[in-house]
Amino acid sequence: MDQQAVDIKNKKATAPTPQNTPINTAPINSHFNPSISAITEEMETITTPGAASGNPALMSMLQGKLGNLVGEPLPAAVQRRINGLKYLQSKHTELEGKFQEEVLALEKKYLELYRPYYDKRAEVIAGKYEPTEEEVAIGAKVDEDSDNEQEPAVEKIEEDKEDEENVTGIPEFWLTALKTHPQISETISEEDCDALKHLVDIRMTYLEKPGFRIEFEFSENDYFSNKVLTKTYHYQDHVSGGDYVYDFAEGCEINWKKDKDLTVTVETKKQRHKGTNKTRVVKRTVPAETFFNFFNPPTIPDEEADLDEDEAEGLDAKLEADYEMGEEFKEKIIPHAVDFFTGKALDYEDYEEDDFEDDFPSDDDEEDDDEEDDDEDDDDAQPAKGENAPECKQS
Image (cartoon, rainbow, N blue to C red):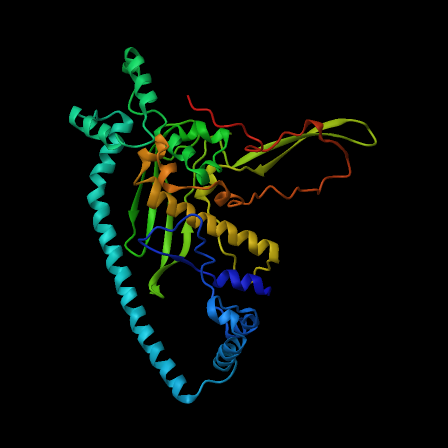
């Protein structure tokens, strides 16, 4: 079996619950324990700034002592003390585990305290609750001293007062918030927008076992019959090294309506037979790049699976990006949805465009060349959904 496949199977992502996982820090690749040989190999390149760098004798002495400690067996007395330090470290790790358990319990407690505000937010967005004058006044003062004031938007609202009776709640609130997030925006195709306009709430719950579930509630739409789509992230039951360890993600089945499946697209090609010169139209279904692939997460293959190096790296990147995207919903989008709607989140989150390149490698990169021995005319081939898609237009 390919060694790379074993590495991926054994690789677990540290999920620093409840602390946020920054999008530019890869939790799956965060564990690297340098070996003694690695340190020894780099010892020759060590340079010491300051006085030592200008004193060859001192440098020689330091490198000699370091070399003795690293490259040679430690004296028995020193090794005994090292083992004593390892004992102290193990006790520290035990306390770290208890700390994480208590913090997770505290996070669960406060999620229930936040929930009434989340519920009221959903009512405002849906038009079921109108904020009081006091709530509006307090909210207006929140960004009073901010550099990102929304004065133009306020003026626009005042100009359109006569049309306000035709507006219910906050149209396309969640679509706008998701399109503002740099990473998530990259996964939303133009076709996705019509479906995501019906997204009325995003919420999360903690599992009884370590982990969390994100719920996406939709109003009636032309694309699928599900009222709620879910994505669940599971951690291992025990704490390892003071952190909860990410285990796997679980999506849900989307009940697509006829000819409305956004996860696939149909390509059509005209083929002309060499002998008869007759043409025919050939159709094939191919995967599409869509936000709704989020509900079909990548999985770690069985140990028997034989993956080459490129396949293993691609799977690793997909697993990493999928976990990070779940953390973004949990830690940023759900708690601070209005800041993503207004764009203010981009100021304090300090996202950089380079952080999101190649997070979701396309499954369509490799073309299927297994065609019949016909003379194909590819000029009429239709591209897959999401390919060179124009910017999502919101009404």
